[in-house]
Length: 178
Image 1 (cartoon, rainbow, N blue to C red):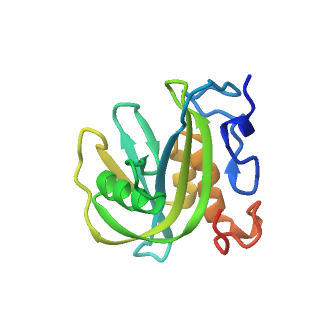
Image 2: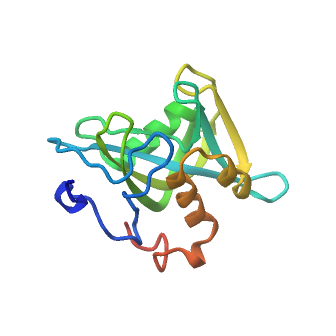
Image 3: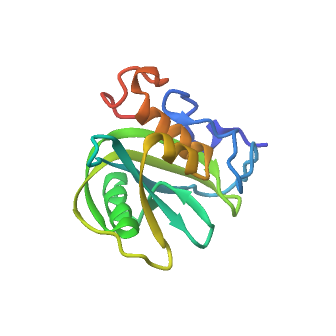
């Protein structure tokens, strides 16, 4: 088994989802020797609802029948920040502004490839959701309902960092770039 450090993955538990823990459909503790890892970026898109409660946007992907945070792969030469904004808009229809980094996850995807995804807290400034083949539904949910609905533990971990910054494993969450 190839160590995560050999793949260039951070082992800083304050910054990254532990790669040895798998969500449904992911392979726990297995690594494949590959020439490059998949890099992606996305966001926790949030707003204050009409009743003053913080809500986050989750997307449903019919291909995987899962509920997750919006994200996608980097294009060649593209920064993680630009990817996060572009992919969130492509999946949700919402143009957003980045607020601060919230975390980075590392896992082996369904095809056995190592993947790193960096997430930001994001606020929508324009746009509206239009269903597509890739994402057929968007739900705005209070944090506790979003944590219950997401399909992957790493998404739940990220939402927990947003919901409970005082108990986050990284002191001063959002004040330093992970």
